[in-house]
Length: 266
Ligand code: SF4
Ligand code: SF4
Ligand code: F3S
Image 1 (cartoon, rainbow, N blue to C red):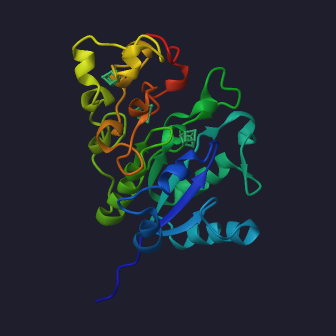
Image 2 (image 1 turned 30 degrees about the vertical axis):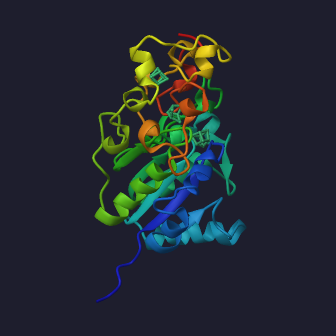
């Protein structure tokens, strides 16, 4: 039988910090290297490609033409829209322009990280570059939001693998996130939850309660209103997550988390 062609992925970077790439390459199951080398055909990524410069930009154009209507478009980063998008230039063009061009031929779009999904830290008030989410400037395509700053590595690889295997996005919730990974609050699976339920709270980061691992709610933990898989999947192959390292959840996967109440107050 003829070998099935690997799904083509184009990965664009806009207004962002590259932390989502840093997360992605640390996926253990599947290994990011296995995914990139054996399961998808990653044709364009500023950061993961060996190529650069004009030949690489030419390859992007060729790929968009050759696989029009078929490729998966992964986007990391918000989209600055002020002044015709000149606050983020990629390959000599405003990111806004490149994004619209690439989105037109995409079969589906993945918004990786809270920048792509919600506009990102650079969208914090007064948002001088008018940075917005990808879905604010691209319409009419299947889009999945994979928020988090950054998202959990295995959530990133799982979402693109789902599309690669089933040729469709996974089931989404009302905000466009995969239900499988954003169906629970951090608070629902937090191992410190028994302390919350018993009213045992750390009041300061250096008090006896903090040292004993009590609940971080009074130090600003946003676990009760944040949807993500950190409590059950954890980071770096199940090693830890913010709360396990002694800091409350700042709600990094929530819309506009940067402009919500102060991080350390309740
Ligand atoms: Fe960086 Fe966070 Fe944006 Fe990812 S979502 S690119 S980690 S600022
Ligand atoms: Fe909930 Fe945060 Fe307390 Fe965990 S530390 S039980 S998520 S409030
Ligand atoms: Fe982010 Fe909260 Fe998880 S800050 S990494 S959603 S525990």
